[in-house]
Length: 208
Image 1 (cartoon, one colour):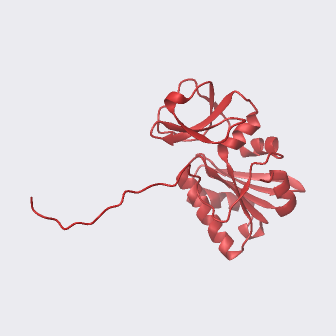
Image 2 (cartoon, rainbow, N blue to C red):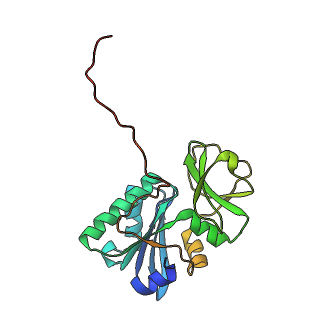
Image 3 (cartoon, rainbow, N blue to C red):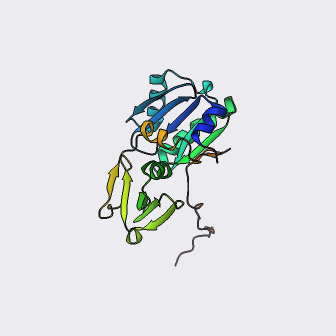
């Protein structure tokens, strides 16, 4: 997997969009100039375009797209993924995805910290500096627990969780040389596993 520095060298300028948290973050990243950032607290279908207007950039100007595929707000992430698929139909270009919690874990660089985000039903997405992304029930979470600010949760927070800022303008320079980005031909929200559905067999109603 390439690093952000490698992506900038090969494909810059990059349009980066992150809708994993309550605050939309959009970055215009160039290899030869300081990065520019915009943020919005509006819902993703509006906030992304407000940020593009603030930055005064058009998607067609990007050499590649970079986006967060989760964990985080599934609605926000899928809204971004739909926009990326549409823009790539108009002008094909590379798309790269990253995990929100991996960025935080690598930037914090604390081996004993577990970075978590709500996976619903009393379960949590979690990652450490040296382990891949997992999903664990609340009862199995131990040690130092850290959760990015602005990430919504429906389950009660585990005891002792501490917040950490989720500000990509500050986090990404700390991980610019880490191999955290994956090429994808079908942008979508990250899932630990594909959903399964029960098969329904139609039957003619009969009186009891």
